[in-house]
Length: 84
Image 1 (cartoon, rainbow, N blue to C red):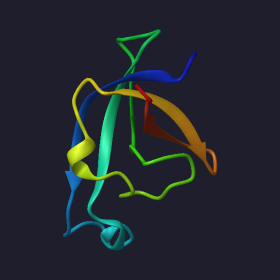
Image 2 (cartoon, one colour; image 1 turned 180 degrees about the vertical axis):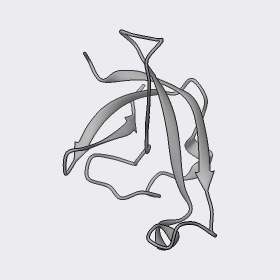
Image 3 (cartoon, one colour; image 1 turned 60 degrees about the vertical axis):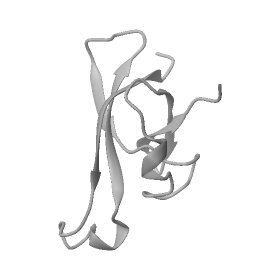
């Protein structure tokens, strides 16, 4: 699989949250529809770039339908916006 897709849905989490994540807020959680398998949707976080932390992408840049690609940070999948 290419690791490319589109943002199908998203939410921006704000406190109060689970104590371990409160310091990271606000951060996004996205649902991505894969290009090769549109019936498969994966959950993750959209970040500003590979290796960037949660919350590194401003919430105003999130859009339904935005093109994204998978990146991995410590084995965890994250998503970055595709360059247009």
